[in-house]
Length: 536
Image (cartoon, rainbow, N blue to C red; front, side, top):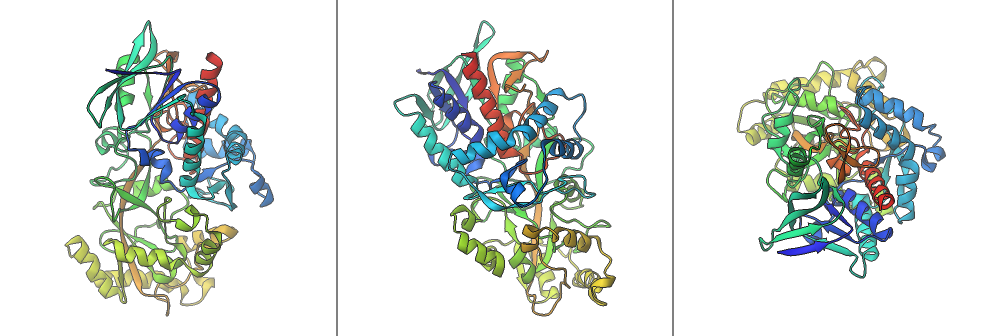
C-alpha cells in the first residue's frame, strides 16, 4: 500500500480545495491535494462557471454610486434567505460574508491578478423588491475559468520542491482516526485500483455538495415543494454526498439543511455532454413568454428571470410535465439570450473586450446561430404555426395547438395596440424596471410585440429544471471546523465550500442573493487555512 504523508490533506480539487491548499502552502505546510477527476479538470465546476460574485462595498460600486454597506447587505440576505433566527452558524457565516467579501475575496483576488468587468449587475431583486436592494453582482474578467487557472498556476508554484502532493483520479473512501483525532484518510487510485493511505494531522473536506446525484437530491427534496419527474444535471456527478454521510455516520458530523438547493428553472441538455444527464443552464430572456407544455402562458403572475430563482424553480417543478417553453423572436434572442458558464461566453472568457462590446451592442447572433445548429431543443420557424409543429415533433405529442399558441402571442401583443401608455402586464412592468439600471438596459429589449414586423423568425426553447448547488452541508464554525453532535469541533476535521453549505452548513438559507457561491468557497477556505496555521 502506498502511503502519502503531509501536514494537511485537502479532499477535493475545486475552488475551495485549491484556495485552502494554496494558503496552507504559503504558510509553509506540506499539502496533499486529492481529486477524483482527471488532471485537465482540476478546478471542478469553478473551471466551467461564469464567475459572478456578490461583493459588498467595492470600489466599482462606489464608482457607480451604489451605496452598499455590510449592514444593508445582511438585511437583504436574511430577509431573502429566510434564515432561522436561531440557526447560529449559518447566521454567523452570513454576517462574516457581508463583512469580509470586500477584503478577503475582492481585494485578495486583485492581488492574485484577477480583475472584474467594469459594471455591477443587479440580479435576484425579489418578486416584491425583497432580494438584492441594489446591484452587487460583479463578473470576473475572464470568467471563473481564468480565475481558477490562475490560482492553479499559483498553487503549483507555491508547492514547488515537493511540498505539494497532487493526486488525480483518487477517491477518498474513509477517514482515519486515532484517539479521537482525524489523522488522514484511505483512498483508491481509480487508475490502478490500488489502495492509498493518506496521513495528515488535519483533513479538509472540499468535496462539493450532493446535487450531482439526483438520487441524493430527490431523497432530500423538501416534502412541501414540488419535485419534477425529470431533471438535468448542472452540478458534477462526483458531488454525490458520500463523504458527508461517512463523516456523519463514523465521526459524528452533522449534515444540516440538506433539502435546500440552488437549482435553475431553465436548462437544456448539453449538445456535447461531459457525463450522463449533463445540462446547460440558460439565462432565460426577460422578454420571452414562459409557457407550459400546451403552449399557454404560465400565470397569472408571469415567470420572469432575474427576480426570484427559488420561486421560478417551484413554479416550473409544479407543471404537469417536466418541461416548459420559452417563446421569443430573433430580436429578443440576439440581445438577451445567454448561457451560464465559461464555455458559451468566449468573449468574456478569453478577455476579448472589443468583441464583447460589439456583441452586446449589435446582438449576439453568433450564440443564437450556434444553438440553432447544435441543440434540437432550440427551435426556429418563420411562423407560429410552423413553430407549433416543430414543438410537437420534438415532444412526439400533440400538446401544442397552433391556435392556442397564436392566441398566447396575440394576447401579449394586444398590450401594444394603443401604444405604451395602455399596456397592463406584469412582465412588461418588470422589464421596464430592469431597464432603469444601465447594465440591464444593455441586455434587455425595449418592450414590443412578439409579432413585431422584422423581429422574426420565431424561436421556442424547450427547457427543464436543472440541478446546480447544495445550500446545505456539514455544519461548521467560523474557523471552518466540522462540528459534532454537541456543536463541538471534531478534532482535525474541516469542511469548506459547498461541502459546508458555503459556511455553517447552510449560510444562504432557502435562497441565495446569487453570486454568493464562489466567494463562499474562498471565504471558508481561507478561514480553514488560517485556523490550521494558527493551531500548528
